[in-house]
Image (cartoon, rainbow, N blue to C red; front, side):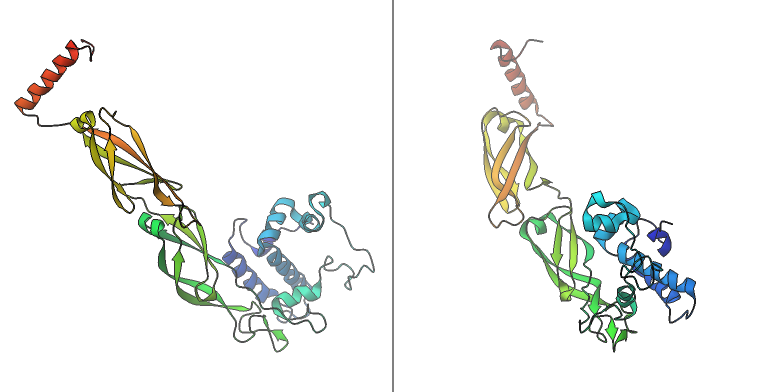
Length: 325
C-alpha cells in the first residue's frame, strides 16, 4: 500500500520545516523501540515516521515525492524515466528479508537516535544548521545607500554535549534528542547592500547562523520605483511652461536643475540618466530618473491678470493660433 508521508506525520501538505520537525520529534519519542520494547507495530511505526521525516525535511526529496509519490527514489537515482519501483530479491543485501521495505535500518536508526548507521571507523559528521528566513522592511533611502540592521532570530546552534553530531558517548544525545542542535536567540548587526528591491533575498550569518533576509522596501512620497529606475513629477506654473524656465528636480542625492524649453507640453517626460537607483552588485551603475512635468494653473486671478488672459485669447484668434469657437 502506498504511504502518505504527510498523513504519517499528521501534517498538511503545505506544512513548513518547523511543523515537520515538531511532528517528527513527537512521534519519534512515542514509537522509539526503547520505549516500546518488543512491540512490532511500534517498530514499524517508528520506521515509517523516520522515513517520512527524512523525505519531507529535505527540500529536494520532498519536491520529488510531491510529484512522483512512492517512485521518487527511482526518479532521483535514474531520472524521470525510472518511475517504476524495483524490489530487492532474497539475498539482495536486506538482512530483514524485506520486512522494512529494503530500507537501510542501521542508517535509519542512526540518523535519529544514535550512530547505528556508521560503518567501521567513520566519524559522525556535524549537522549543519538550516538557514532561516526573516522579513525585513527598509526605506527607499536605505535601499539606495545600503544600510545596517540589528537582527534577532531564534537560530540553531551546535549542541555542546555532542558537538553537533547528534551522538554522545556512542548513543543518541539526550540533550538535543540526536538532532545535533539546540535553539538559542541569535543577535547581530547585518549589512544590507545598496540596490536591493522588494523581494530581494540577502544571505547573512549573524552569530554563525545562516539567515535569508527577504527585503520589503517602503513606499516613498516623491518617487515611484521600477527596478533600478525612478519616476517623479514636478509642478510648474503655466507661464513658466509657456515661456521656458529652469526647474529644480529632487533626486535621491539632493536636487538638480532641469532646463525646461519654451512651450513644453503638459505631461512631457524628461530623462535624467544615472539619477535612479544603484543596480544591485554594481558600485557605479545606476538607473534613470524620469521626470514628468505637470502644469500648475493659476488661481484667484486679479482683474488685470484676467484681462491679460483675455488679450492673449483675442490675439490667438486673430493670428490663427486657436480655432474660433
